[in-house]
Image (cartoon, rainbow, N blue to C red; front, side, top):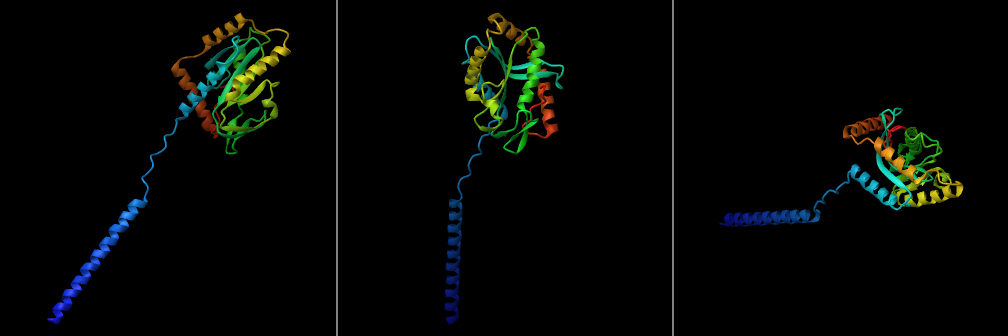
Length: 256
């Protein structure tokens, strides 16, 4: 009889211990699941092409503020026999009575460091950016070749960066007396207006009449290549050049 009583109490003790253990495991599982925050949805990345489109739109808004005697064109692909791609691509060109502004736009973030004559500039000391002044010099030469009949026209090279970067460049590139200027996109129209005022003070009369301004724009628009295949091939070749150099910021050779 005594053995039966002992066996009964042993079975009861084991049963209660099992229940406690199960309860602890359940509580532990609840705490574990409660402490884990719900996974956050992945951030949506803006495609590089979309960023470029937004940047170009901001530039167009700036150029819309220019004086009425100025005319501008955007996204020009002009034939250029000296370029490895066969073309030169100009982001923007502003034709004024006192000169032609050729504008190259960049969408980098970080510190932009370099000298006027350096082949490559540095972006946050991480990778190279082909000197956009040299790149734009190629654009200007291509434009001059097509406008050779307009003698004595002054060309002003402008490089426009977004406010996501900061400059460590030659100070003269920010001064209005220079014909090579590096600016932020939000101050583009201001710099062009200031440069026009300086040119008006320096030049005895307008270099181009209203008819000549319109004639230049008509000619450039007539040369502009709209063919999608030609543009895609130009982009492919320019992109291939970027890979060859290993520089993330490289956008093509000096003539592209």
